[in-house]
Each structure stands twice: as C-alpha cells, then as structure tokens.
Image (cartoon, rainbow, N blue to C red):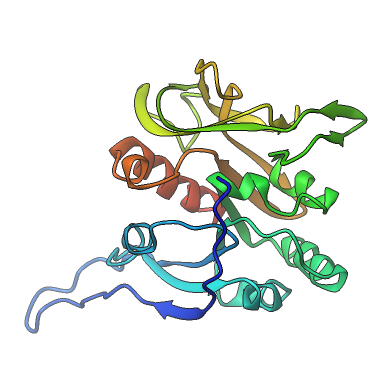
Length: 251
C-alpha cells in the first residue's frame, strides 16, 4: 500500500477486432467495444500483469494515462472519447482547477471504476471521498464530523468474499469465493453506497465493493486487486469487467 510510483507516461493500447473471413456469411453486428481509460500513478504495481488483464479483449479498447499528465485529460469532453475511466492510482495533489474539471466531467455521465489502492488517493480533497464513497486514512482524519484513526493494511491475506447482493448486474449468478489479497482496515465507507461484496476478515472493513452515483456518473469501487494473486482469480475478473460494463451503462 505504501510503495510509491514515479514512472509516468501516456500510451494507447487497442484490442484487435477481426472481421469475418472473405466469403463467410455476414454475422450479427456486435456491440462496439467499451472504450476505457486506465489511469495510474503514485503507487507501484506489477504493470505487465495488470495491463494484460485489459489488453487483447475484443470487447474493450483502452488508453493509458499516468499522473501528472492524466490530470489534464480528466475534464469535460473526455466522455466523447471514452465510456469509462478505470482509476488504479494513488496520488494526492491535483490543482483546484483540475478538481473542478473532474467534477464537471462526472456531471457529463462518464462511467467511473476505482480499484484497490485508489481508496487512499486524494486524501486532501474531501469531495473525492464523496465521489468514491469511501476513504483510506494515512493519518487520523475526519469525515462527516466523525473522527477516524489511521487505517491499516495487511498483504498476502486469505480473504473470504461473500456476495452481499446476489441480484445486482455485477454479481448476479456468482457464488462466494476466496481471494489471496491485501486487506484494508479502519477505512471510511459512506452509509449511502450500495454494498455488493463483504468479508468477515478481522483485518478488513466489512465492505469490499460498492456502487453509487455521483453527478450523472455511475461509480463502482472494488477494494480487491493488489497483485496477480487476486487478478488471476476468475471471480475477481468477472466482477471487475462486469463493473466496467455497469459503469458504462451496459450492465
């Protein structure tokens, strides 16, 4: 949780989509791929394995942006190029103008998916806690008049994951499962969010994933996903990509 990332950059990755072979009967028109922007920065992660989850899928085209450059992209107009922003960053400093631009973008209705250590991002920006629906505290803090001690984390834990809502588009048909992952304790989770996944792990807050809306945007937060041990879990992958589709309004 505490390791910092200094690599920055901007790149584009496009999934290959092949048409029918010459002479083949025309196939039913498929839905266009979801256009997602992967935003990183401020925290180390296993880059090749993380990006491999998204690359090579025919249902997704993706762009990559890293802070600080990413901040200039998160403004109205981005919704014309992307359906969903997937944030796997943990930065703490964007300008007031960049904050206002990001809020304005969410009022345009772009989908927003926030992953794992993003819970610790933008701790000095109270509105982002509302956007995300939760917060990890690196030092004692206050939300909605309630004081919280510093949050905790533990890596390499065995986490029993319970489906809290079996009827939601993201979790429908799934059964409880086990992850080997990092857990966060002592975090704030807004009472207004709709919780999809829970755990009874003693080192974790009970809620592991939730949805809500901010402005005109659908927001999905998934606390799981520290490293490949979690990313390779089929249930994790199903929930992540269903969450992206839900945020885009295609759930």
